[in-house]
Image (cartoon, rainbow, N blue to C red; front, side, top):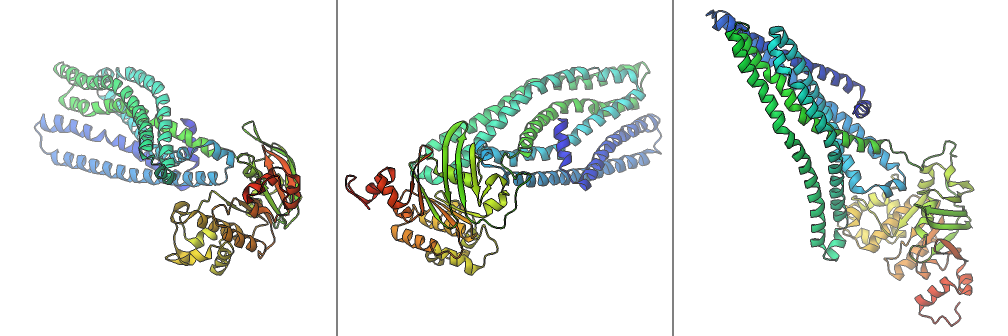
Length: 581
């Protein structure tokens, strides 16, 4: 718990720290003010009512009113301060966590579910806020109230005070037992919450697939199971707490019974005045209530501890792919690429094995192969989304590990088959990687990607906001916007991963012609299955089972009569026995 609080404290800005300390001091002071009115009640009973002297009545009541109003005013100010301080911490944490995720590597996102990350950024962070806004001041409030009230009651009558607090050790033992057993349950409940959020997120993101396969009922039942698992875990925690609640309540009520019964005996024996008994009855709750709150505070502390641990895990996560201390600065990617005996394994499973080839600047490389052969992994290594297991990938003669990541990736334009478009305008999506583009330049790149024709016909043209992931556009239209976005950064390396799979042959031919006449020079990587997309490439690579089995030009590969030749025959309806050229 100490580590979590220290971590929160570090993420609070200095002015808010000072104010937080002041607010907690105000909390302690208001606990001290609780003793004033019971003391005045003693005078009211003994010196006014019992003595039959009404003269100090109004002054005593006025002071009691002022103390009450003053205490409530101070506590109102305290709550406002604590709420602002807690919001400051959550603001800083959310900003730093988001930044952390922006610069996290691909293995990080492979290992964490989206729903789990969203839970950490929302529900878990809210418990961190709840600790600073409520839990910590309630702890101080309970401790100070108990200590101040006990000390004051001892000065009034130590015997009766001793009888009141003798039950405290029993409550502490019960609370310790409850704390030890409830933490694992909170961790389990938090995992069930992440499972439920993940199921909801996947369903929302894949709503078109769900509807296309009429799987609404299946998804409903799947979410129902996750929802019920979360509810059951919550109920198990409440059941554990409620099993101890009657015992705690019984002990707390015992304190009040002791006060009335023993206090009455002391009055009869002359050891206590009616006014002093009023003090005990007025402050018995100050001894018992902290004990009653102890269980709730333990619940909240355990939930905070579990949530904070999850957030801290994300906060302190280190990316395995980062800038090297001696990373070299480059002005611009020229486009020379070399794969030198590259091998890559994911979770000990080989994906690429001994891949070697080189490409000169401005040339076009095409990669083809069956599904799962490692084509996408190949380009992921080029942009250093993953680090090679063996060998080296070099860009412009420099190992990608010696490049600064923002310079390397900023000089590579990527358009993939699985297109992601933001909930932004068409212009905003195309200019995503280069915010300095003018509207005319955006339109020019849209024209080169054959996206201008349909973009001009949208209700508000390039200012039309397209839905999340490009909802409202066809697959081919989304691909063309993604291609325009990739070209708009004027990259030194342009990667097209099955970018034209959803467009017709005429559009594909137009795009290929535009790629040959770009207003900047770049090396092009084309990953495709269509022979028409790659036949003009300077180098064609055929990947099978993570290995390059064929490489050469279109004509050279046809002469080898291997995988490429077989694919050519299938796509053009030729008999494999015939000669092709």
